Length: 262
Image 1 (tube, rainbow, N blue to C red):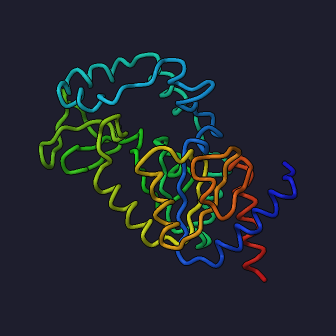
Image 2 (tube, rainbow, N blue to C red; image 1 turned 30 degrees about the horizontal axis):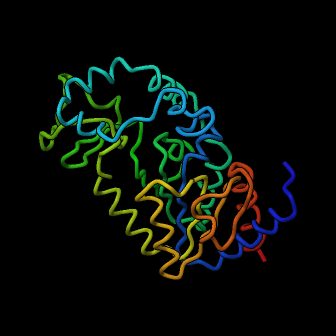
């Protein structure tokens, strides 16, 4: 795909900023997952557009009736089933692999992802915090212990943590559920160290994730946005790359290699 000259110029400027930065963090949103065939939640073709947006009481209902929640999970409704099937089919796209390569080369230090699809791990990224959880894992709501779903025997409903006896649920964060404390603490730590944040496919409206770029900017860091569309964070950004992540990020890696070899 041939990029427009202004996009190439923005990528070149982005590469120079990354090279001059000490601690680069990527904040990744749903736009990167959409490029892997996972439907968005909002907008045309979004799951909530078709099936209705969940209310904010999901986690409270789980706490009130964990057995009922697990029984419903094992017999999912249409919206959840469509998402689960799309997630199962999805594979990492060139944007995921570009982030992995940036990490291997030492240009990228951490990924904070809002996505639950496990595609960063499948692509080989290592330093990743999944602020909204991971669809392939279960988590204890008390001690935050996690297990891959296929490695946790469910002998009773609702399942209990073998370490502390707490309730076990999917690792994905539900509406009304606090962000797991270990994930939130790591995101705060990374944002505090960050002097350059890449905003990749994120709308910048879901908190607390949307607050991390603001924190970086307020402490003197720089923001680089990769998104075909304008977002709530665009005005804060030092560089804006108006192209799909799967196209722009591999090109960024190429420019980083060229500039660092000089």
